Image 1 (cartoon, rainbow, N blue to C red):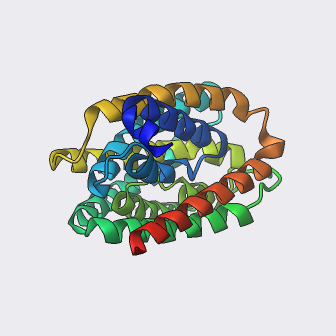
Image 2: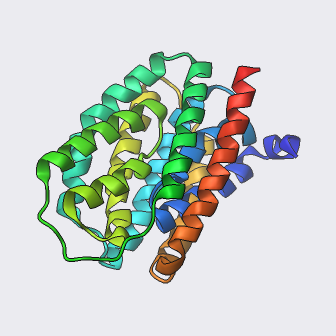
Length: 257
């Protein structure tokens, strides 16, 4: 099976991009964490740094496309989202610089542990009833943004699993709005990480473009379904968290052999 996937890396990259785009649009976080393991183990890039740089481009563009769909539906709160993203911009730049200096195997091990934490946090998180919008806590928004950006840059992930709860805690916006608004920061953090890795030559451009093409389809489909699947979002999140945990355990076992 892996031989067939490696033999058709661009087609596989399109499928992987569509999965990431779909997940980003539906649940707002967690989808981008699959980019690196997909690129390393399914597409066969091998080098973790090359996978992170390539995946970051796909994640950034796929998030931007999913964001466009949510914006058209009026679910994006731009002021809060842009503030969050700008506060995390420096952190994403510093984090990605440190990530490039880290040993590739240790980076994969750290990512697998982080994926287990992401899976647990997603499984335990529940959609809460919408309430009146609370005053925005700008200091909390800036703090969450800086922390999320640093982690996203270091591991080459979008950081949506931190961004969504950060937005709801700092602004009181509904879960649907937080998922949509989080895509601003996912786009910015992914683009920052991608630019940093591209400057060092850690990007496979054909694979990145194939992921973007697949993400267009996945993001459009997810955006169209997002409004109708609000009631079942907890089930989707739990199912996806189980998948992330399984992949993380397999990665950890592989890097420890």
